[in-house]
Image 1 (spheres, rainbow, N blue to C red):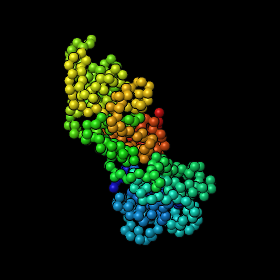
Image 2: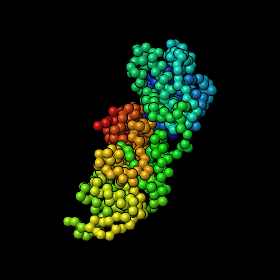
Image 3: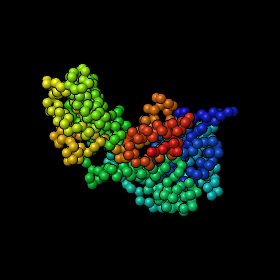
Image 4: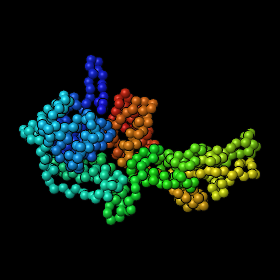
Length: 474
């Protein structure tokens, strides 16, 4: 598959090969890592199947060593999926014996040798696939129904939550000295690889945001709608947003898009326009907060020659420019009250009056408005007209904040890095960098994520991988 990177030295070329060691036994992973690193393998560790799968989705590997027992997934089924998804990757199971060793490539021979050495180092025995002591203790692993797993993001969240329970039970069973020796912190987070605690946190956040996936209050199941090209994300909130956009787009209904700054409200507006019957007509954007109040009316409605000082010729406004298409009014909450009355007339009658003109002009425009401010609060503060609010909010949609869809962070990161690859070599995230992204609260949402990744790509210099220390927040 060509996942290894070639690094040139002065005298020779060293090929870096990556292997994922999937085992719940931290001692086994540490022994095998030591053997493989001596053979110049780059080792990534995973405490379970869900973590191993997440690592391979983020960055491929030449080989995988799979323990005989996984805490979250059935080993045979997991191995079968890995052979289908990564057919070129060498898969070595510690309980397969000679059956897996049929056609031995030099790469597989090295893995087998390292595996035998790691097994012999374990208390002087060569036993394979021995269950660690922590796994023999009774553990209450949460059980979920088939409907829970079919819920958007449910399978991923459940797997992460079950892994976290088993990892916590393992860490509690090991003495503190053993935890430190195995390279774990006091709270059980592993410093190597994509930490299971990070996946568990992601899963628990998702489950907390989806109480309706449990039996007692589950709503009627809606068919899943694929995300739109403009919107990256597979979380429940983004799939619901895609469903609403597809429903309202074919109509001429006014849409109000609400959401925090940096969530991508303009992308949602473009998606509505693209899926509408007006897609071949203009999509005109006006940021109400970016234009001085004295000029906003003329910019929006247009003006005649001599209408005010400096108006040396007549000018068509943004509304007329959007005739037949869509007018997107960003930051509508910043529109002055005097202008709001004229906007209300436009929405109700489809007529506008240029500044300095006595005649009205009829236009066919669909209006989509967006705001990061709570307009209902602005209404109560008498800073926004109640009648205009109701006219705009015929079909309100909310873009979820990034902190409320953390399961989309790595998908977004991969998309943004690929887009940055148009101007510079495409870079990828190390496991430590990915964990740094997952631990952040993202007050600036997707815009902040894009800036952090761009900063990390610059700090990584000529390296193809963005390291943990390259991820810096303001």
